[in-house]
Amino acid sequence: MSATTATVSHAAAPAASATPAGKFLAAGVAGLALTAVGLFVAPPQFVALSYLVGISFWTAIAVGMLLLVMIHHIFDAGWSTVLRRQLEHGLSAFVWLGVLFLPLLISAWVKPGLVWSWMDAGAHLPGGHGTVGTDVLYVKKSGFLSLKMFTGMTVGFFVVWVWLSARLRQASFAQDADGDLKWTYKNRVTAAMGIPLTALSLTFAAIYWMKSLEYHWFSTMYGVWFFANCIRGALACTVFIMLWLYGRGDYKGVLNLNHWHCVGTLSHAFVIFWAYVTFSQYFLIWNANVPEETFWYNIREINNSDGQFNQWGWIGMVILFGHFFLPFLYLLSYKLKSTAAGLRRISWCIVATILIDLCYNILPALKNEHGDPLPFLSLNLLWVLSSVVGVGGVCVWAYLKSFPTAKLIPIRDPRIVESLTHHEASAP
Image (tube, rainbow, N blue to C red):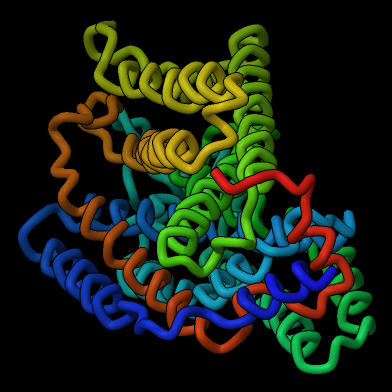
């Protein structure tokens, strides 16, 4: 017991070395500034859609972290206790993500149709088939697809996420001071109501922000697809944080082989979950062969103009292998999913494929006169990268600013000893 106590004491506070928060903030500001410049030197619609890719990517990761924290509490998990604090620090990004989403909301009011075509009733439909305002499908959905509803719902999403994050963080940090079990019970209550609230909000966010770009499409699995990407992105970032803290020496004596294995196993489970959801949606739409559903996949595989297999079809293949076949086969290995080096490689593959997946869902909203998505290689991805770096730099800065405000691990959580001695395996 004395050895465990010593371990808890050693891991109680972060290392004294300064974190490079300022560097990440500078990178974030530079990325955002470059994206803003893009509005004047590139097609504004493409730059705005690229920014939507960047903010959706980082929001997905933050939502995944929020869900992982609440899942930890609702199941009263033991092994993940030493990791939970770092996810709680990650939740500090929600306030800034809400602020960074404001340019998209402002553009929706100032220049309707720039990003979401249905906001402009006079916008021409792809292929020259009338305008949005005369489109029967839009008329049927106009109660849901309205600018006021979009704005109110988007603000509501961030309010829910910020509120849940604040409750979870406040209770967890307070328990470090007094060790009172009431904070554990409070977080279980927050998780019990927070999981359904987060599930609903992330689903509507995915529908409003991404799916409504092509509002003719019908899908009942879109929110679940986004949920899978949220969790997978959060788990990959958890691996990066573990690597960073282990490399600094903070997590030495805290993490052991089984912590890495549990993260790897959970990542493997969500690889299969993503494949199940994505294949089920594709198969059901293909089998039903309803035009209002099949067109979304058709334009991402075959050009309307000439019937040729297009570049987005190859991007779909990249997603299939990067999201499923490669990580599924890779994580079957006990060694690869139980070591720092093994998880590092596959985590980079996963986050890169999530980004490509979001591009696949968002950027084909840019179409030519024939209704075909602009070829992938014709797009200047500089604006996608600048948006990802810009929003990401601010998110990492928020995490690093929160990092020194609390103990490295929740030292008075009732299951901290169980977590520290998880199967008593040696470090990788």
